[in-house]
Length: 141
Image 1 (cartoon, rainbow, N blue to C red):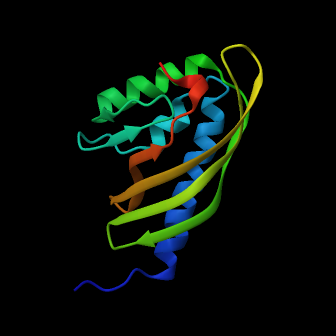
Image 2: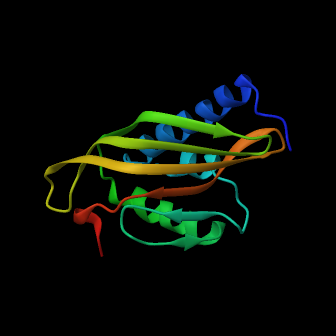
């Protein structure tokens, strides 16, 4: 049985999680670079986002984030009711994602989704390896 995570691990995971949402909000302006930096670039990464897609592997995830950045949805999304479970090399964050974006018709749409983020420690840095949210009706294909 492995030792429980240290409180500093929880703090580092929360910082990585905050980095993801800062990157997401920057993505809404059209800039994907911060989002690309918070993710692991490994082939075992997964992304199940608000459009209902299921991307597997860094190449597919990278392409999806670039496509989303081009939409320039605007707005801001923040995590609420955050819960962290951190092990030595893997951590899971469960939360709500709340805020607003602009839909395809240009109207502001409120967002409240359930979100799960999975991080893996790579070379001492917590990198995202999985992200899953509910779907948003205005983004469904």
